[in-house]
Amino acid sequence: MSPSILPRIAAGDPAAVEECLEHFGGLVWSLARRFCKEHAEAEDAVQEIFIEIWRNAYRFDAGRGSEATYVTMIARRRLIDRYRRRSRAPDTTPVEEELVVSPSVQHVAQAEIRDEAARAREHMQRLRPEERRVLELSIDHGLSQSEIAEITEMPLGTVKTHARRGLIRLRELLGADVQAARGGQA
Image 1 (cartoon, rainbow, N blue to C red):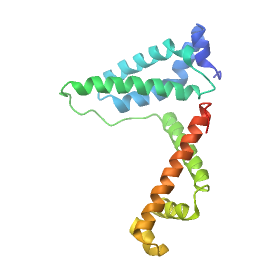
Image 2 (cartoon, helix red, strand yellow):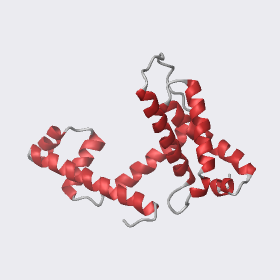
Image 3 (cartoon, helix red, strand yellow):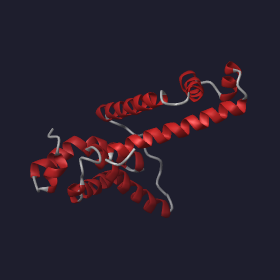
Image 4 (cartoon, rainbow, N blue to C red):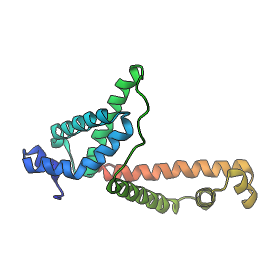
């Protein structure tokens, strides 16, 4: 796969269109199946998404994110629009089978989750020691705030405060990562 599919689509390269379908088809299909109740609706959504991707390929900016992120953003916007339209009408369709995700899409999703968890773990080291300890006991050991208060001999309110402040700080730090990836200031 070429590292620059979208600019080639914007330039009118027909081979890039096929490459885009091949490379991002599983991702887009997976997202469509999550949002759409019926198989046929998901197929329609995938077609709309790829048309939108091709129409807007010229807007892709590698300095703001990866092609996969750009494709996901377009797919997500399109699917949310479809969901909103569908939610305005009464639902009369029966429940369909469970979502089936291809192993390659599952692998990509798991890799993304591992990457995000690793970034969060790195940023946890930047928290105050009390905040980090409370979050680690909660996340790593599955302890409730009451159990953490008992183990650490901290008042429950203090444990809750450390957890809240730690999570807020983590969110800020992870948000700064996103801004930096987009080329903004951290």
